[in-house]
Image 1 (spheres, rainbow, N blue to C red):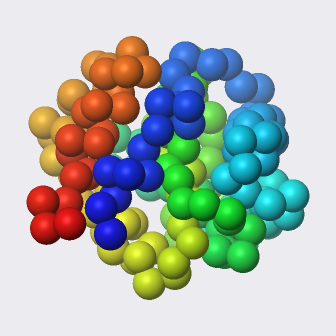
Image 2 (image 1 turned 60 degrees about the horizontal axis):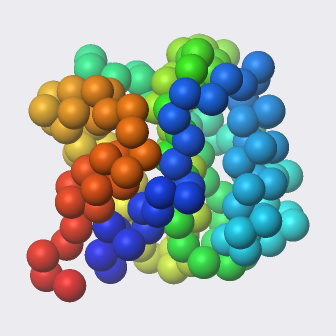
Length: 158
């Protein structure tokens, strides 16, 4: 799968202010539903899954969250990229009470479960690459962000 096809400018949000993770999920879910990417069940499913399996990830160079849910809630595959104006509190992956502030969120919508692990691995590989992280953090233009992510995640073999 060429992961570059999952990035679309219409699903990028840079500089919006959210009061909470729940508000961010609600607004993202509504937009995804309106554009036909997800089913009505998506918002509850992503909240429920995040509560059971937190997706906040603190690295030496960036804090990111990679929320996702089961494929049954997705109509067509996507990655929704959010860089909020202020950090949003997420629980650290693998913990039940360790909160981290996140300003980089990739909401994954995958329709083929066999592709999810590969995509998660690739995202984790990229966020450990200082050049990728520095470039990603610097970009505040939607068009430039779309081009950057498509070029970064493009698979030459497909």
